[in-house]
Image (cartoon, rainbow, N blue to C red; front, side):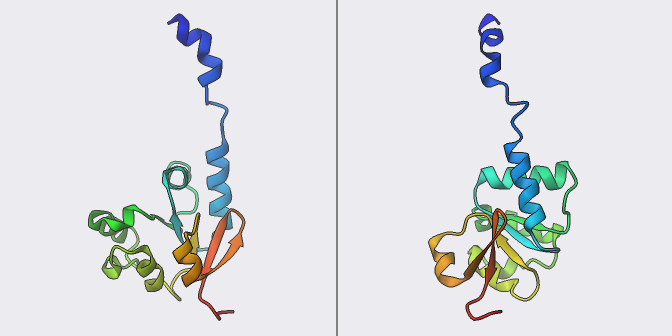
Length: 135
């Protein structure tokens, strides 16, 4: 117990609001009814907390990129956001293509493949996905 008391100041994260600030800024940057693809736990968990815990931006469909590979996760998201297509397949780029013209699309951390396939426009802490040659 003495070790806990002695080290409490070093491990106390109660004043660390970085994840919350990031999530609120990211959700504020997303257009109405956006698809927001989160790449990694640090982004996804913060965004889910802001949306489900704080009640912010229920209009934004948040998809964790690597979980999209799993059929159970795709089915779960389609229950919450029926316009998302579980039939898009496990590649998140197919999901993006299926939402073209339906929802504005944003991503937290695009990879090299996305940078080659789409135009990525910085918007706050996010990148908006556009198609080459689109206005």
